[in-house]
Image (cartoon, rainbow, N blue to C red; front, side, top):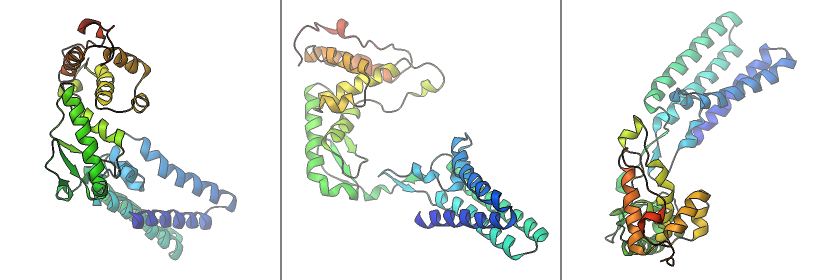
Length: 292
């Protein structure tokens, strides 16, 4: 990655040098800066996602712990950068007419080759990391850790068990296997990952073709789960709306069986596009009772 980014810097420098040779002095610097800035910024605004791979900036999309950089995401911008460097050398060393023609051919060939590599990637600069690097324990739930996380194994195991036990006491079943994506996850993050494993993290397939009423239930359900797992309320407030938190505070005033009924009723709406959420706690029990 560092080598590719170095090539990109050298390419911009080389083309800027050529601009200084062929353009009037007053124009060379602003033109070089403008073209360079546009090339680095403009592709990121396009819906033709593979174009974003060609300038070297799309590596900001990589990588979480379960990903590795895709070699094509490095090779594509590296080829374009090498083409620009070669074109700059041609323009400096050859006669203007021949040099410009050959430089244009070299740049076109480099962009074509880069595009050939980048098109299958689309928006993504990463591919799945080899799962053999995961180390899984025999707990309930099973906790699988990447090498970068293993020094925190003791704490992650404790926090995962704490969240799973609290949620089990609330009547909620979490995923049988937990994987975290931060190199050094904190307690609240770990509790949240375990809690959110109890509901689908992706919309149902029907949501791509029409309205999905259940999307309004996601926020309150996640907030309720994370609080039920034992997370601090300030942590939850930081990632949820005021309305979500107001709803969840009212729900948590219900007896535990009624809270579970509220959760199960609304969690079902995440799996289809027919059921309407029923987020207000009034229909699930006496909300005047103390918080459980």
